[in-house]
Image 1 (cartoon, rainbow, N blue to C red):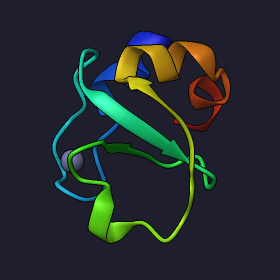
Image 2: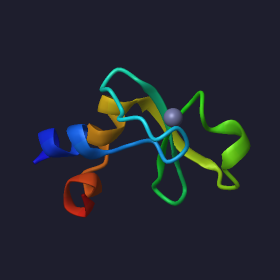
Image 3: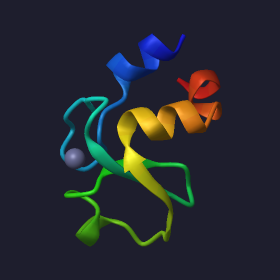
Length: 66
Ligand SMILES: [Zn+2]
């Protein structure tokens, strides 16, 4: 299940697929974005940060929603 998530999620800013080692932010809307993409496009506050793999494994709701 989680392997599918890893392959399918794209950054909504740059449209690139996330790689497990990418540094990302998770905002309060549970949207994942590259840390390098985040600044100008996000009115929401950051809830968590870490590598993409860290975020996906920490928050199980990703397995249900995608
Ligand atoms: Zn991006």
